[in-house]
Length: 300
Image (cartoon, rainbow, N blue to C red; front, side, top):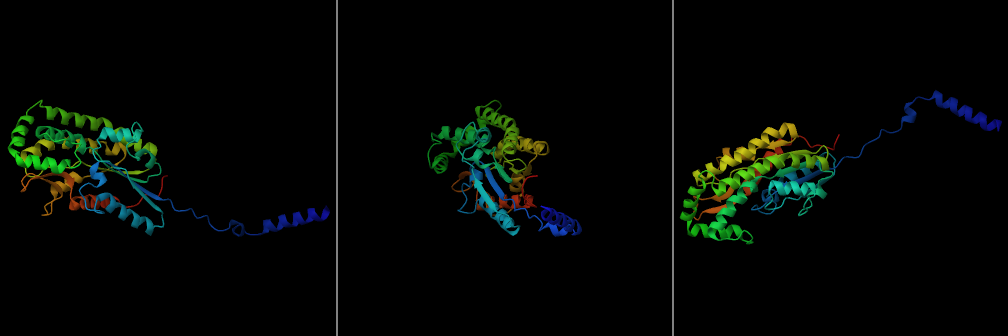
């Protein structure tokens, strides 16, 4: 017993005499936090009308992946954007009221989120009105091509109808005004819902661009409603905590010869695809890359 006590005592004395760094061991190295990118929104976010691999989500994801690998961080991505989604439907997806996509299940853990929403709040009423005018079903799997063919057979009908719809209190004006009101009401729920599921995530919200080319009257008419949505986006960015990526301004300032959008009523034949072309998707990706000066490596 005395020998064991003496040994323990000597060991304690030796411990006191040794410098602390001997017992500090190797510094603790924290494992890299994954970079997780989630794309939310509508058909623009889903990459409609882009060539395979040329949509803005894929291009931006490739940039983020490259940066993550260089920093030694694992990289994950998921695109839950769904064609036809309005701001109210995205709000429902995030809240879990409806589950057409994996949005709610995918958001937890996201460090970067892009949101493309609001365009359908306006384009859906416009396209629905034109489709009804020409007797085309929006459920047709070839809707855009069928509608384009119908309008091109009788463009005068559309021109005359639009003159009437631009009058105060027309059915189309009321539908577009409702689209703006819905967006204004949905925006805080969308942002707070994302943050509630992915605390600390960096959110990039795309402004709504005007897809109409070749008809200055219709373009100006749509601008009146698009500008209201974009004004709401910009006014709430600081308070709600997201970054505005001004796609609308970039498209407006573009002077190149390659079309950014597949909608041109002055073309022969006229085209009515409101989605970005490959050039348009690339511009959106470039805007996102410019906004992403650093990759957020985890939440504080």
